Length: 301
Image (cartoon, rainbow, N blue to C red; front, side, top):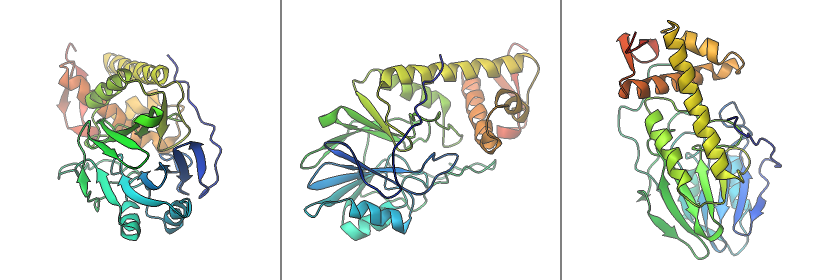
């Protein structure tokens, strides 16, 4: 099943766009291979508003968020889907300027770094939430209520946020319309990611708003295509192993031949995530080396 990617998005950097009665979006000028057109910061509600994913610590973006507020509005809460540097660093200066409460999952503990290729999405080491959220926690404002939906996989501390008033799910990097989400060990875990995708199918959200790219208006069909894509990629990796290929770099060169080479380091980590999941299932062994430098074999080989 091909993923019905949705790539068209009408925006200007710094311009607030009213997406619905309760939702505005301001996009940061940080485009790139992992951020698409840039980080989309959402302003939710009226009066005391919530901000979701304030984005990178760019002065012009912070000013644009504040300029998007009406004269009688103030930011009461700042929500973070996860702590990659394109999502959370602006929270600290925005909090200092507004007095808003920073809300998100608990910070990562030590041991969540790898020695392989570094992702553009480095981890925000300064993230310090005032309110630590767990799955199903609900925060409310004058005109909004946001439920935390724990969706580990892209990162272990990833949360989506459900706006009950408009049946909308802010999906962060868990599900995006323009591309698949990167699942990069050790922060990323493929088994957890697939379980989190399955969980979304049990929900009744009517629209997804990712942090990067346009809205996803047929979310269940989109998630099913995401799942099928991942299962298909797993099958391709297993076939490569069956043909005697054991090195991740060579598997990537074959399976991602048509993908921008700037993304090959991310693809290698995604293949590693699949291999770690296959190891956990008992289908694959790593006989020499480990991680990206390991050599992997089917258990039946």
